[in-house]
Length: 219
Image 1 (cartoon, rainbow, N blue to C red):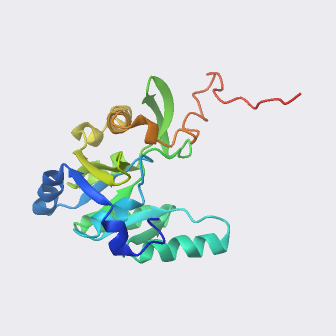
Image 2 (image 1 turned 90 degrees about the vertical axis):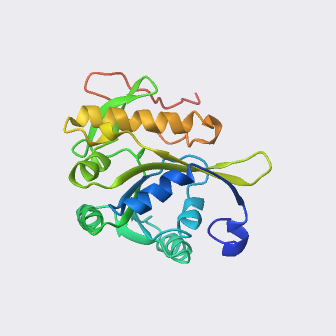
């Protein structure tokens, strides 16, 4: 729907906004914005919502199927969203954008490599958590804003905007990641049935810890 419907038709589905004052403050501060958008509700709908207020750039990992990649890019580009690759060049691009007081959006709950992450609690269980948002926050004065688009009972959507914890800027990566996961938890608890629980967030565990995902045997 968010990729293929006419843009005005999609925008009409956003009938509720909570915390718009936080976005307005972030825009007024003119220090750049880091949008923290977990896999909650219809995150693609956020592209439509934010385009009414700003231009944002998102880190993007291309799927292996070229036709699918072309479709996703064209669908996102129609709402004028900037895309950078999910690699070192993309990270450098995000820093440059924030130096220029731009707006970047990062998905905080994707599993990073061991080098790029740190284990931190997430709903009482250790989860490998990316350090990128903390690094961006420490090195720039950008406003930290959590956001998600939840489906309402009437089939429409409500966009929720919440300031993120300033502890994410901590020089201690453990404190930073813990604060980030706490913010994600608070978002999820608003509508837990709309979180993408099928994503294996706990696949990697600290050395010596038991594996949490088991392959089922049909024998």
